Amino acid sequence: MSQHIEGRRRWLALMVLCLGVLMIVLDTTIVNVALPSIRTDLGFTETSLVWVVNAYMLTFGGFLLLGGRLGDLFGHRRLFLLGITLFTVASLTCGLSNSQALLVAARAVQGLGGAVVSAVALSLIMNLFTEPAERAKAMGVYGFVCAGGGSIGVLLGGLLTDALSWHWIFLVNLPIGVAVYALCLALLPHLPGHAAGEKLDVGGAVSVTLSLMLAVYAIVNGNEIGWTSTQTLGLLGIAAALLAVFIAIEARVRHPLMPLRLFRLRNVAVANVMGVLWAAAMFAWFFISALYLQLVLGYSPMQVGLAFLPANLIMAVFSLGLSAKLVMRFGNRGPLAFGLLLAAAGLALFARAPVDGSFLLDVMPGMTLLGLGAGIALNPMLLVAMSDVAPSESGLASGIVNTAFMMGGALGLAVLASLASARTDRLTGSGAHALAALNGGYHVAFIVGAVFAAAAALLGALLLRAGSLSAETEEEKEPVGAARTS
Image (cartoon, rainbow, N blue to C red; front, side, top):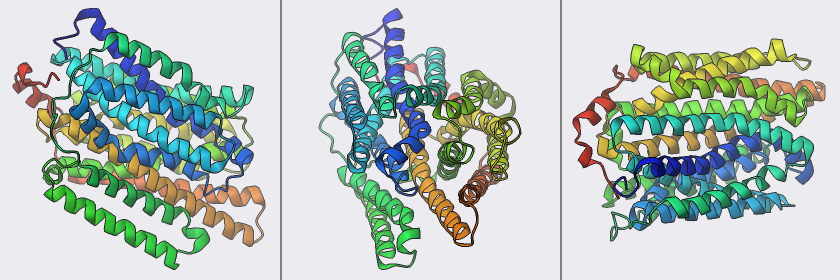
């Protein structure tokens, strides 16, 4: 594609692609601030509220790889436009929702559109910029948008929920989606897919998505129905069987959704396990701390947004350049383990936050450590996930680790929300005050989240191979002309 877009137009196209990605990233964090308002308005329980987040994450994670594959088959621009359309229409439906079922269903469609946009946008950027120096700059812009979108999301979520209502956190996507669609038509040429005629691994995508959705459903309902009940054990058994079917499909199909041979590469395998653990910890931070600030400390949605701002700004600054400098100086393994340990410490601080906590003493320290940890760890995590992979498969490796992040977040959040609910119920049954019981449940979730982050740090320190820029070094050996241009 770089042969068809040159000069300023190529950078304008990058801005359009990043604007589309910003809409997806913004939607991930903007919802967290409004969750208590959504819970009150639509009558969600604490455990069922998780599905406002999980319905999005599961379809997003389940269709990331398939979205990229569809782009290869039918053209990246065509799929980007389709993803933007799905996401925008689903946002309108979310904004107009007046029932739990409609909101959760629309969030699932949002996740599908978001998966297509994210997967295809990255492919378009890789194809737009084939020169190593320009690609590095373009990916820097892309990374900054991904990190900075969190700051915009929490602030905008608080502002819209306070000033108008939670419905507007979804309706704000409409003008962005229309603008991105129109600019994409004007700037990106329509090119056919370079893998036309190859078969889709639909079976793989369907089996792994259904497996994870059933597993999360069983987990979030485990406390209410019983962990040893026929329904819970049956759903977990079906989920395990579907996962086995997925692995069997991937081992036999000619064009697998997730080639199993990649997991024979140590850094790829370890990085994806770390990604699952870290995502579980990070989603616990956003989800549980937002509930703590609003339901325990009594913060307004706008105050919650401002409370998250320092951490998100720190993450954005590190993603823009400081983390890369640390990697250049110390390699991947050290900064990654150190960043994850900082995040674990931040979650541990939240696990001691009292019912009458103050921002400066009980919120700001944990937020700062989490922002530092996440900002330092993000770049080396992605580099490690692709360090053993040939340049021609770097996009696939990126898609796999993004899938691990989304699925780890969904499953981890379900586990932590269930643990928090169970602890709250036990404290309430023993006569504890309602707020103290609620806070006690959140403490358990924060502690387990800290254990997840610390376990990821330990895995990285013990199992990752040393080295900082092996992937980039190999790319420099690859002729520029070998890059795909379709």
